[in-house]
Image 1: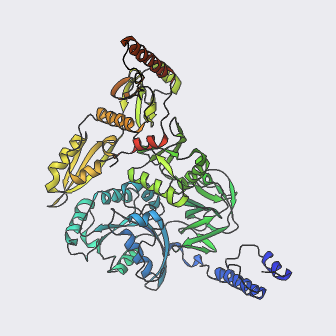
Image 2: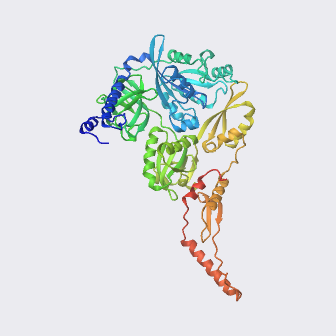
Amino acid sequence: MALTGRTVSWWVRLRRPCPVAAPRGPPVWLPTGLEACQRFYSSRDKEKIDMSAYPVESIRNFSIIAHVDHGKSTLADRLLEITGTIAKTDRNKQVLDKLQVERERGITVKAQSASLFYNYKGVNYLLNLIDTPGHVDFSYEVSRSLSACQGVLLVVDANEGIQAQTVANFYLAFEAQLAIIPVINKIDLKNADPERVEKQIEKLFDIPVSECIRISAKQGTNIEKVLEKVIEKIPPPQFNTTDPLKALVFDSTFDHYRGVIANIAIFGGEIEKGHKIVSAHTNKRYEVNEVGILTPNEQPTHKLYAGQVGYLIAGMKEVTEAQIGDTLFMYKQPVEPLPGFKSAKPMVFAGMYPVDQTEYNNLKSALERLTLNDSSVTVHRDSSLALGAGWRLGFLGLLHMEVFNQRLEQEYNTSVILTAPTVPYKAVLSSAKLIKEYRNSEITIINPAQFPDKHSVSEYLEPTVLGTIVTPQEYIGKIIVLCQDRRAIQKEMLYIDEHRVMLKYLFPLNEIVVDFYDALKSLSSGYASDKAYATGKFLCERLKDTIPRQLFEIAIQAAIGKKIIARETLKAYRKNVVAKCYGGDITRRMKLLKRQAEGKRLMRKIGNVEVPRDAFIRVLKRQPEK
């Protein structure tokens, strides 16, 4: 298609990319495309919401917290519908669960926020909702989300009742001194028993039965009562627009075209496009390019004011510039930084390596961007003789590790090798030489290959966790046996009602990190107390089956320190050197065999064994191949 000089100049004069695709066909169509582009930007500017219409006293910031699969995301869908934020359709399922891994697994792994507008008794309210994960591995997401809220909806399944993560999330909100509204969901189920659940809530959390709201998020029953309770019980944020700007970065994502998009809660002042702001963490200065709210998609606004929750784009190009928990303030108006968040404590460590070392830089870039979105993951450089350069990553649990790996594959199209998970240990050193080398008498070990010899250590320390188990009383005996086999110490046993019991145990983390939950579900008796020999023998046998045979014998050993606990021998290939000896003196045969043995002995001294990468990967698999 030929373009006239005039039409080219129309497109060149545009200062920003036109969202309307360049039309195809005769040149006469081009002005129409330009007009559509101009209409788009004018309508976009007109649609900007005036956030000054929502003063602090008409703002409510709240989260939804619950155990896994108790209906948080379904309740969020209904709240979005009833406030007109999204249209009512049968396809509205997990609207706030935007990640592919969330939709595939049916769980929330990433907290998402949305601003809702609701008129109650003639007053327009701005309700900022944050939907949080329910699994314990993502409790860091919950704790960060609560920092931007003044209240929570505690959702409990009317059939299942209070479960372990219900208790954990309640205490997170209670310690943050937030208003708590109990919501009993799924009252439409055949086996629902809301009266029993109300009594559990009253007994465990000391919340009166009269404050519980019975709903069915799936059918939309009593959803308006939830909104009314949010407005009546949750207090407005106690911030002032006349104060200097103070904004908390509680989450962030990375956009390839716009850079870092920071989710912020305004603790004072106001912010708009063109403002010069400074990061308290990096001390870098930025100019604000865009501010807005999430509805749940990005909706630009003219300004954001104290007490409001939204997003900010300020030209942050590097992922390290957006520190979760950072405080943003106005240039030349410094403020006392907000306390931020406690650092997440990784509980499970695993090595991560590119399948091909040529992909190292691509994987490094993907890791940086994904850890911006999931700041609870710790990353340290590592290397392996078998797998090359890589990283040792720290996760909050096994599911967290699996989801992180899946997100790398789906969102960044990377393929990685993930080693078997381990937990950190501490060693109290007794060797003066090692104390001088490490500059400390106590060291943390996250890589099994770096475990110091027991003769240089006076004491080993292992991590422990306080676990809560909620179970029907008929399974108590088997569960107690399972916990004892895992070296657990019972701390508390409480009957929630006549059918359910809550047990609290102090567990060594290493005993529960891999397969405890599966064992708990099947109520098995667990493994023997000493698994080192069995594990070492299993790995030696797996290596024996995967390493190619050589012309000399190979010894495969598993060791703890200097002690060999298991061994397998990979037999050598053997050439029949006496095949051509048909009779004759026996000394001729013995001479050939002796020469062959001497050659093999020499070969064992100078020979090298190369372990194929695919063989190493097969060894790392926990389940034997069928």
